[in-house]
Length: 343
Ligand SMILES: [Zn+2]
Image (cartoon, rainbow, N blue to C red; front, side, top):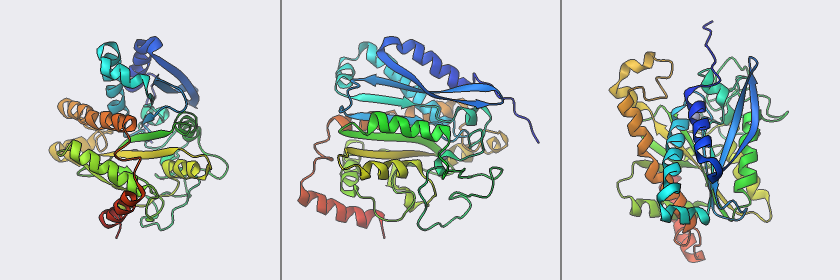
């Protein structure tokens, strides 16, 4: 078997630690957990900016859940670098941060990136690791399997408890997003598709998502504000259903709370087909399928999603037109959403 050299200080980790040092007192940084692989310790960092009072509107950015999709970490680190500059000079951005909180967890699965695997050090696919079971599975193996950690999409021993990385992500969401009166999460992945997809739950079921009216209004707002945006917005279940999705788990956990606040998790699945189509030889590179190899294509990907991240932050601060809907409007939106997204 091919032995991969595992480096604790891989590029994204070095960049994150540089950013943490550069933010200094502008940010609150925590090592949520450390994970160990072949006697090397890897920290899982969270960086928090802004108001930080529990109720303030909060956006969480998550990346690197699947180690092979390191471009997800890159995209978030690149956004953090922009914010590092904005906090120094942009008065309107400083004002926004006084009224809101931004949470960053750009490297959820450091061992996965270090050893170039989708899974964590135990061979577990973290996005299949929650105890939520799929209601109708179309693709038995891909949707999550319990047979072996040697095969991809292994769910792990989730009944005994989730993996450290999955628990760390849940801890951050429950601590910093759940108490907020309005929070959204964006988890950045890349997949073998032709388009960039912006997904809302569910992933475990084809049932309509409860907050459909709000998602529909949010989508309308995005379409009107950026008519030329690149995203296909839809429930994950329109593409496939999976076992053990962490975001479904967290969404349903928040729903069970009688004093729940509004929490909406998104997944950004960047389509890698365009990178491959234009550079087919990258399929032979170990990162190739899920990562743009050519520098100009990487740069393009790093800047492509900044308007979306900024839009999510601003819509969290100005929710009147999409979150605080009248009942009659809500009903109408729900009907239209059912027609648009569910057969
Ligand atoms: Zn992924």
